[in-house]
Image (cartoon, rainbow, N blue to C red; front, side):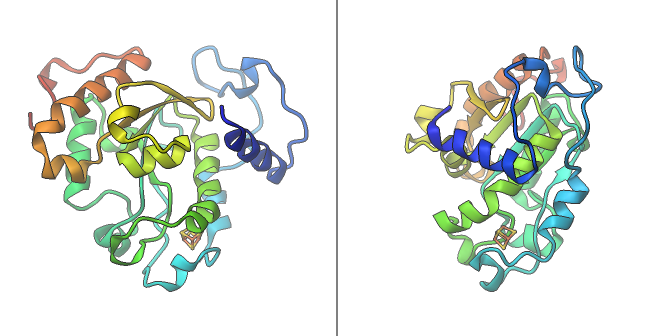
Length: 236
Ligand code: SF4
């Protein structure tokens, strides 16, 4: 883990009042997970959402967003998808990945043998940037701690980073997505797999086979195999 991630981790623990960290793997174990051990719940998704409120912590609050798009899915999902930021459809509905790209993401999830409600879907930044521009560093700095809390609460085994922006932001890397994908990265106690953003896959359907390779890798990390009906992936 690079020094920035360590610093962010420590800042997060400080924020939630933890003053010491055990080196034991069980410290992070989740109640109800195989081999897991009960520990007090520090955050719930609802309490994180309440903490965000009608957030004005960064300038995206004043640049035309309709609402905060928090995240959706199973509160203790094994598998989590993280994208960049809400677009117009998401801003309208208050739910991440509901437009055309979202429909493809749903197909990808179903090809893996899950229903959309089995996984958790969120973005690095919770408000729509104007003209769908990339979020800026100060906006990411203000919003990313909420994503960390979501991850700490959900404790997914595997996080799939959707697209170059999410992968590079989460991994604090300048490497292109073509270099980041194909590898398993450690991230906040989970395994992180970068893959292509569904919007990119809509524009470049020939790349779907590579995304499917990434999703099969994610399944293997959860000791799962794709259902036979998945064939060679969604819409392949
Ligand atoms: S992007 Fe995040 S930090 Fe900025 S206003 Fe929205 S919720 Fe708050």
